[in-house]
Length: 283
Image (cartoon, rainbow, N blue to C red; front, side, top):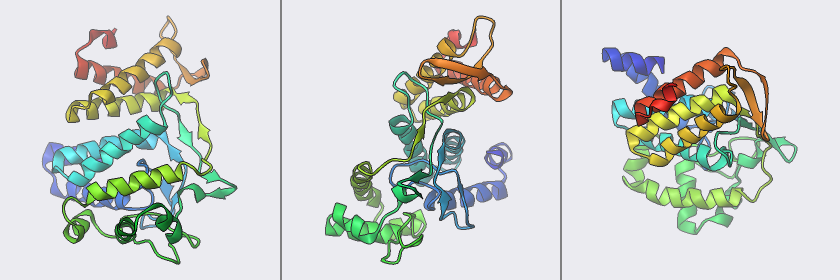
């Protein structure tokens, strides 16, 4: 975000190239959940291949904002795609029924780290048609031996531009149908545990990203998600004296608010005012 801001303010080409190179490598890698969208917590190698498979809400808030800004500055279809995928992942898999967002999902399931996210070549072929399997194997570089403990972490085998040149500019239309099938198949597995507490600072940061992206891409349901998240916080975590509670879980609040909670909530309120012109967010 610092590099993107510098590129925007100063038309600083090296800063832009630095950000573009890093963000394309991350989104191509295994640190990014190619099937469902969203980023894992961090990578344990220099190629962004093998992640710690935990997913944190704060990563999604910051990275969706970074991909939004990179799309604004470059017009990249790939960065736009990643931004959309992150935000739709959060709405689908990380949103509380009453609004706001869960804080994290674990790395482990079935007693092993990452097993939920891994694929054998046979498991791919079981779910997909032959032509779909061939595309998935080519795009993600899936092999018999795998790239992690005998199984495959899905990652783009080539750059987005190279894949477009090889499979056609509309290859993602077919790829998205494949990913939907893989997602539905993966949903039948035992899921990692989800940490279902709402953390004010993280949810507020996510609301800011939803509001800004919703405004830029004219996605009204993202703005609505931001509004619901902030209003849940105001209704449950803020007392009449303006004191915040940091945690919301099962209708109960706990832990005194920290600086992060106040700062991120204030930013979300200002952003929602900017996007909606509703003065209630400034009161």
